[in-house]
Image (cartoon, rainbow, N blue to C red; front, side, top):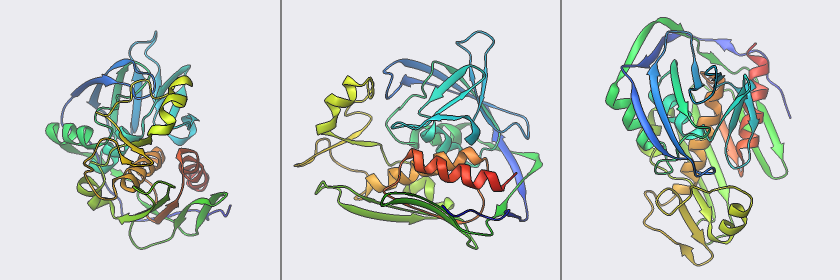
Length: 285
């Protein structure tokens, strides 16, 4: 793994929060439990934070890379004796919408999966509006490349004049195969937010026996088999790789405002995404 020198500060824009509260409820993808969520505006410099209203003392869990506990098929955060799981789609939606400060009140331990994408969250955020705050948003650029490898898989952050996300996947299923996509943040709302999570028919029984995907269904996930997609149509011909990029952006959102760089991932995972974020965070202190 290579490391980066300290990022360089650039001209800052203003921080933003929600224009009002937005309420949600739904099943957790892995727990299968019904969860209630309310997104509320938060003061400048608060950051994005979860609050477990169902637990005594209402513990706060900051949406920061230091809070990452587990990355098994989802990203889980732990702080102050509490946890929240499968945060990546919601965090991606908040990042796409430019929301820096928000309090996410949870009655339950897992963010609802909704339709398996970030689109419902983004539409809810857009419905209440985005409000500028009287505090600058710190924007930095990366001075040196950062790369994390795991076998053939890797994630990289490369110095660049503008922020860009590129992602590649390669699966031994004819319906997916090798796919690549590349977008700037301004393109994510239309090109990436609607992309749904996906899985493989042959793995469903095993994953459920391990206590995973208890809330998964054909209504909130694309399922692929050796003979093709079980529940077409796809929203994009390359929807799987776009969803992986969505997960990547949600995990990078744990940095707050990621440095301006070209982020590239290939055959990566939540583990590699968060390892890259940790490596970058060490240089942002």
